[in-house]
Amino acid sequence: MFWWKWMASVSWAIIAAGAAMVFLPEAAAGSISQLLYFVPDRFSEFDEQAARYIRFAHSVVGAVMAGWGVSFLGLLYGPFRNGSRNGWITLAASVTVWFGLDTTVSILLGFWQNAVLNFIIADLYAIPLAATYRWFFRK
Image 1 (cartoon, rainbow, N blue to C red):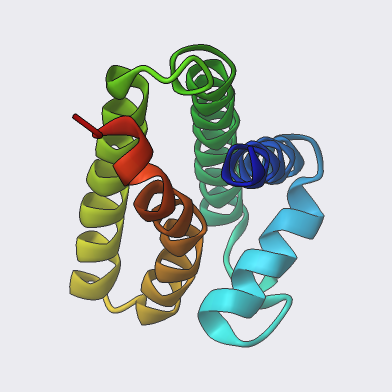
Image 2: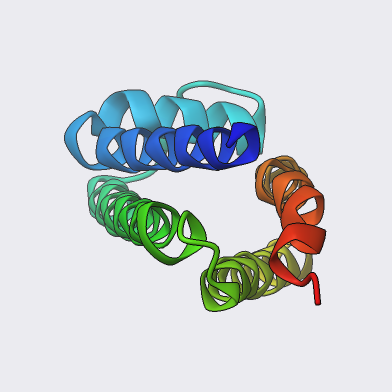
């Protein structure tokens, strides 16, 4: 139950972060700018069209994050909590696919800071998934 609560809490945090990217775009842009450029207002240096696109992209990413978090909660409150291997596998596969794609593109495009953040977030799921593996896959 500890690990389930841990992952549910992380999922709620992802939903909140995603919603903040949609509903508090200036604060989210400042945080992302700080992460990527080590300056909280780097995006203000871009022209208006670029700034609008960045806001759009951040909002779309935030909406996807919130949806991803809701999907995780659905897995956690349903199949995972009920002991279904499919719940564990789906959660692990989702984290693996996100982590692999996001981290690869982050590194290829030179945004290593995002890759570091990905490692932290992935570990917040990988640790409890590893801890619960034996319970889901006992014979």
